[in-house]
Length: 190
Image (cartoon, rainbow, N blue to C red; front, side, top):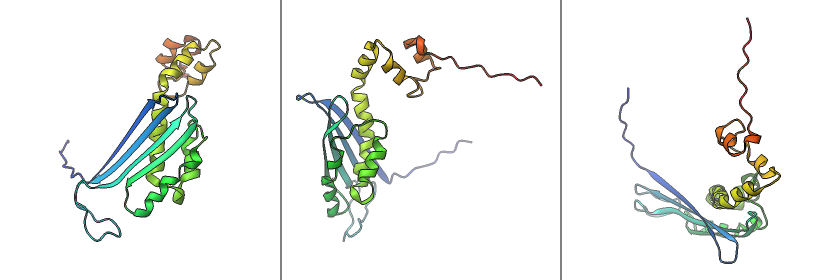
């Protein structure tokens, strides 16, 4: 039975990330977060309601990285926040300088910036920004994988995700030498 259920909009969070090449040879990742309410709401410590659609959070984070995804700059702009003191978190990203975006990135970020060390929403943005950086550099990585003569780059790619699983068609077609067909189930005699 499929009954139609009405849903009343209450809160909207928009996250947008972009990646681009800079004229100095580095790359820039920007993440933006916007929170709005569909109804009037009162912020804590406020004396009056905010109208519907008024931003609760309007935050942007910018990372400058090299082709190896080492962070050269990390800045935040907390344009709209629930409390004025939140803007102090704009200065919290300095520890990211010199870190490499890669495996364990979010664990390291949370260790450095979690809890009272930074803004929760700034930390949240750093996850999608990292995956955006990987996607931004994907054409360079693919060219490197395809140009690799020893296969090391290809072996690292195999089993890195669902599509690149050793037993799947993508690996069979791209790199037949690394393809490992799935073993048929063993039937036991009773």
